[in-house]
Length: 106
Image (cartoon, rainbow, N blue to C red; front, side, top):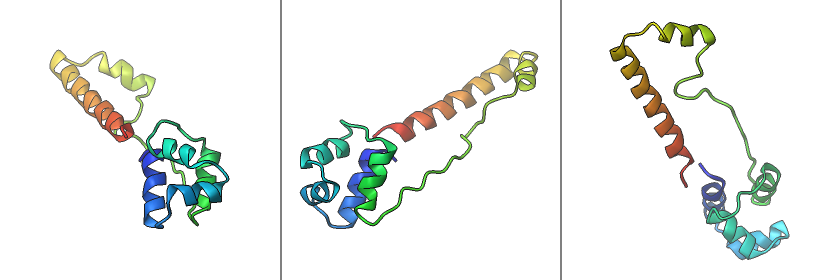
């Protein structure tokens, strides 16, 4: 979820207007609006401050991607694959990258 969608969803869930949130954060309504539209990407500190003013906490975790990076040994093993096997690996990589790109689209 993007910062824009996160801020908007939390603000709406709490029933707070952009102007009210801006006042609580000591910023302008225009700035909150630009964040929610994805025109501005807030820093983690700013995002934490915005969420804290609404009684929420930002919790960031790290999780493995759908397909993790390959070790050098795995890359070398791939060099011995048949063209058909390489095509399967390319399709899997394409799917993984498409999944990652889709999750980053606002």
